[in-house]
Length: 151
Length: 156
Image (cartoon, rainbow over all chains, first blue to last red):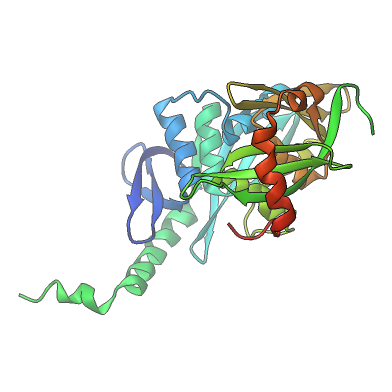
């Protein structure tokens, strides 16, 4: 099963020095944070804020290449989560055939926002995420984190 | 392969900018006879994208330019060449030439993206002769010196 999600925001994570894309479903029942690097975060933020750069950025080029070839992005899907790495696929229609191409979720989402195509997440990913997030929390805890609770 | 008004270049390396703490890197392109050198300033992300491909690094997950290459390959589009076409107000312009079964397509691009794609697809990189003619020697000489003095393509 797939759940459609929207990009609700972008946050900076000072612990990992990375950015977090926040995806949510329409009913706000499910939330999925995805960690991305700085260039990917700015690619997504430009598209969210409708910033037009003087020259095409990398994902603008990706869109133009597909537009020029008359290939249409149907959807992007976050398909899997393995060892803290998210996997996505870009689904395309080109000359009456469908194609599905492996991508990082950051690239898939940066492209989806530009071509205005829906973003889906596999329900397994949402379930796995809740487990892996807890693991990550526990791994990242340092002895000094516990100190905070000393009265 | 000769193309009228175009000079074929290859990437010699990606170097840190001469200005300390700069957010830019410099891609150095040269023709076969080393008669022409073209330095192009690019962002760190784009510089890294070019360097990784030159070093033959295969990342565990496809980077943005790997994705563009995979998209075009799967759709049967071949990148036939990339051309640095113009320079205006210190901004370089490039075109990516794609050929499908039916037609030849041209897409406007920053040179950094065009070069990052060219090195991934072993496509030739050209520059318009006109762009080379307008290069001021003082912009090129420092990089020529560094070419002689320094190892290229190292970590930045």
